[in-house]
Length: 420
Image (cartoon, rainbow, N blue to C red; front, top):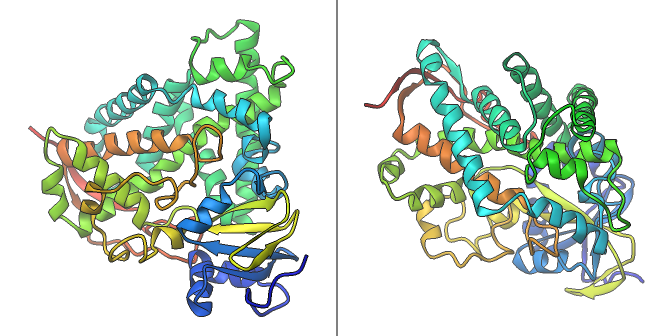
């Protein structure tokens, strides 16, 4: 099948370098230029369809039309996801594996993660008081690493925290990188997989006690559709897929602190026993600031949508950043305003910083709930449990070219004191 002429085409034999030079704005720039939610381009040596917006998201998450197998490049699997992980699965096998992850996201378990995150922050107050300058991003990573491992049942020595947190961070940092950042991510994944394989082995042999219902127990003893346990490597990969996204929340916490700094009027609204405004604030941080630029899938069976032929096997990219800033969905999208979520209807296709669609049968990230819980606990800590100054000697700007993005100084605070 060929595409109708109505589908706009980006110029160039291959625009991969242009993608790296434009980052988060690559798809939104062309949607504006073409005045269209869909266009074609050449990326990664193949013809790719890019699309943006709520309606595009609904199509993208139609499991009859799209599959994830073959969508994630090996370079992403070797750093961010792990090879042959849940992100690459489809159909009943994906649904079965997804239920494993969803079993960890009960209200009770998510509340426990929030409590552990809060406790980790509280335990650090005295050490924060003694430090002259605190890089919040680095501190948040160590807090989340400790909380995530405790929550998952993975043993972690105090002396290991910094290295393990750094390795998880390097895996995340590698997804939009080439060169040294990519290779750091690969080395970090190799170290982490070796560590977690050892943990899985100890759980299975009985050398390490594990509580049923924890992530380490469930991954170690999960059985596939044929009734066979995951091999040790795959169990390790999927356990990392529980831990790593929790560490990635450090990016949102850092952007949340920046939002508080730039919009101090919202701090007053968050100083309340009612955490509903904190939740609204967290959602706006997730919408407003750059996190994932886009997601990919391949066409499962050919179809036509929006006057465009989608050919079987073709790579399609859904614009995440642009959809979260779509003026048709969000009033004044480039203004930070948590109040917009007071009447938000909870659509599965407009707020998609970690993907969209249905949690159980689709590919929406189940870690989204954990993100909101851990972020809320962290924002509550920054607002209601400590006072601090923001160091004036730092660069708080962030790039929409570098993927993933982060304030350049990683947000430096000082003079930390516990509130009375």
